[in-house]
Amino acid sequence: MTPEQRNQTRRDNFARLFPPAVEKLLDRLRVVGQKSVKGSYDWDQPLVHDAWLEIGTIFCRTAAKFGVEIELLVDGEHVEYAERKSKRSKS
Image (cartoon, rainbow, N blue to C red; front, side, top):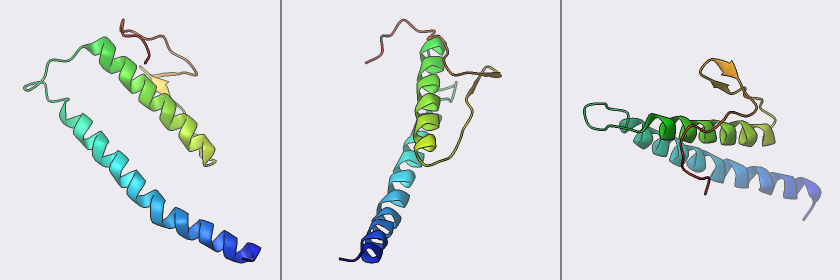
């Protein structure tokens, strides 16, 4: 296989695998968003804060792997690190 063929195969693999992975991620975020309905759920705010902090951090790190810079703001403040508010340990 030539280098050009190898590159085309890698591009094809990415084009085949990346969009469905993103769609699954977006779908799961839609499901999580449904839990924000106050009439149906009573959530633990520190736990929610920490979960979104973790999600935001992972988004930033993953985007950076693709050469995309995302800045994370928590409560309006740009952060590299923010304290967890819940007592739940990181698993």
